[in-house]
Amino acid sequence: MNNSHSKAPPKPGPKAAQIGDMLRVDHAGEYGAVAIYRGQRAVFDRLPHKARTAALLKDMEEGEHHHLSTFDRLLTERNVRPTLLAPLWNAAGFGLGAATALLGEKAAMACTEAVEDVIEKHYAQQIEDLGEREPELRETVRQFREDELGHKHTAEEEGAREAPGYRLLSRAIRLGCKAAIRVAEKV
Image (cartoon, rainbow, N blue to C red; front, side):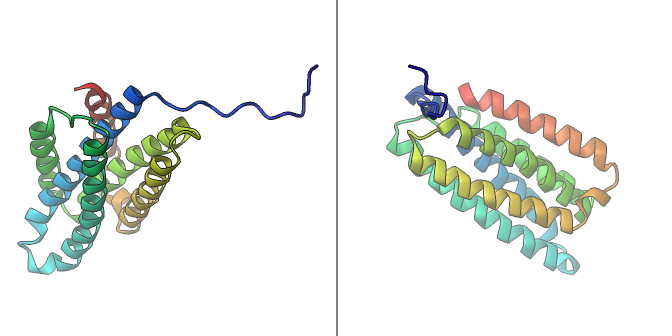
């Protein structure tokens, strides 16, 4: 008998290996985000007339530290190894942060806007992929996505799209983030 009013069964959700890949890439992303903010602050913390920007970046960095410590814990609990590329993520993130800060406040905000745009979309896909089998992890990712959206909106309000060469800078950073996600899932 065909009951067209019945709901489709819920998606089964990802398998343990897929969860491991998700956690590895999320951990790597948060690790990179902390490095980007450290790089930006290495510039702005030394400029007294940029104290407001430095404080804003410090606040966003603290949010990323919270995310990173959560993923540190989840990797340990689920026996998932972190990315082997952490030293590269650290150097690349710090370098990207410092370089965009040296280009000015708006370029630093363009960096944040581009990174957070990619990450919030990545987290949105993960929320959908997690289905009903991982409600706690899905809620954690949902909360972190909201935080990333907040950082993105802050960057937009601070003039990210007014940065010199915004389109090129944003496109390059987005492509780099997407490539990093793909690599970090496995390596």
